[in-house]
Image (tube, rainbow, N blue to C red; front, side):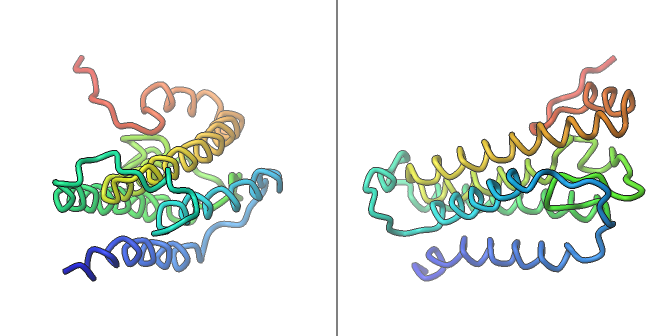
Length: 195
């Protein structure tokens, strides 16, 4: 059983990343792409956060201090596993729903469409929501400071990307995007007001 615990999250993330590579095929061509510097920053930040999340030993002891009760380790593992699977599943649903409009960089696609249905009716950036939830679940399961630090790095990186994306969407879609942004939250689904 210990082997299962040791390999569950690495296997889950490998499957997720393999899916992402396969699904990246067939995206529309780009008309505009974010600057190279921001792509490089993300290309460094994400792997750093992921290695921090997954490394069983780095030479910084404080990262391996527990912030959750060790007596309930199995319960925290399963709570984290469920949260991670739900989060990554949500990100995959959003990726499938987005179809050929998807890009790993902030872009404006040729014949770009504003997608507002499915998971995009719940949050404006459901792939980020799902990815953050997946990281959070893994951080809960490992119960160590490194998980929280990795989550914070990922959040900062995605927040920067989100802000750039929002700016470009407002330029591309104008008032239509503004109304969508007022109606749908960025990352955290909120209960809708009954009118």
